[in-house]
Image (cartoon, rainbow, N blue to C red; front, side, top):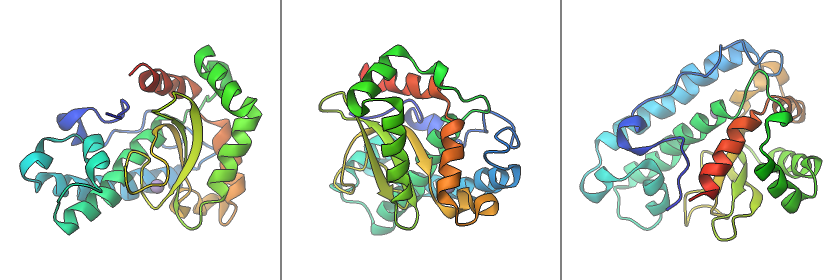
Length: 226
Ligand code: MN3
């Protein structure tokens, strides 16, 4: 099954990770107030609502990991409210847990592993080619959503995709492209509006400069070694 190391099994699922850096650490790319609101209010809300939903699950679903639930959401019989919450709140929690970890105050392409870099060159021609495709996908999200760099489980190759709302590429049957995310960017306005207003492109350029390529390389290794 598909899963990456962001949420591992049930006990860890019931936690919202603290940021791996200070709220102000991503300044000036992402401002402190945005990070406080984003982590402490928006992401905390997804986590709280998801936890309540998970607590109420019964039968087989009660023993499934969040990734397993994502994969089965479209096919398993769940009460409508629970299915909706797992998609929106569960997706919201999982997506943000990845997002915090793929940023770093000292983000640097020098930390990209040779294995990941080789795979990027194969898929996109160059790191600049990936940047263009990834940022174009993020700019092209209508309304709120996410852009992703993913491992294609069928080929092991890399691809770029996007999802609306809090959908996640592991949600088989609900998303256009099922794949394993190793990098994601949040293009909900709550992630950038205070500093950038309508300037989504400026926010995305700034995001590109603070990507934690060491973490993305680890995510790639985890995905690829499965
Ligand atoms: Mn968000």
